[in-house]
Image 1: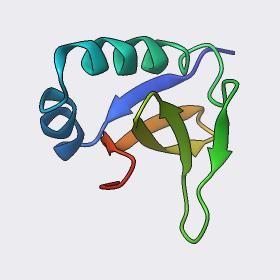
Image 2 (image 1 turned 45 degrees about the vertical axis):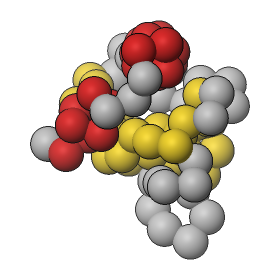
Image 3 (image 1 turned 30 degrees about the vertical axis):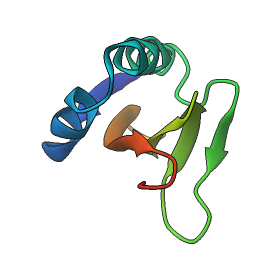
Length: 82
């Protein structure tokens, strides 16, 4: 089942601050969420609601609603900042 992928308003700004090669890597990782909301390497976020996936030195934080099915991108950034 294909999921709808949406992006929270602040996430594109965080995403555009990434270096060009990291931006492209995150873009490809995001495409993996449409057919499968929890692709390989996707882990539950500890201490708060959401899911995380590591893409190189960066991390993408998502909220997954299995009932809809939708994936909302919350944050993107370096692992130490997110």
